[in-house]
Image 1 (cartoon, rainbow, N blue to C red):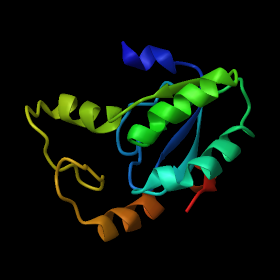
Image 2: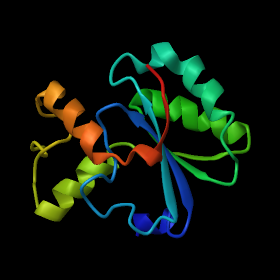
Image 3: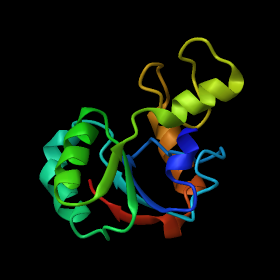
Length: 142
């Protein structure tokens, strides 16, 4: 049911550097197009103004999905007040992966950062570079 939100839509994903929402699965296969804004993986609220300033330049006719921890809630609220369709999508990608495998507790997911389970961040960063289509990334905020 949740996939109906972005079915046939152009989406922009604002996510942490290691999140890779939908990479390696079919979560967003029914979206018309995907663009990404990559943000710091930690202490992201320190970059809030930079993220918000860039987000304000995005077209309002695209659905913005945000996965940035607690920062996502504030960003979705601020963007909604500016007329954007912005959704704090939470941990939907890892939850989807766990759902597909029948996991009943947090487990590692190959190539993805799961904050509930320890992971090797340098390996994930290297895999990010290989798996995310370069044409999807429209901005990196460091």
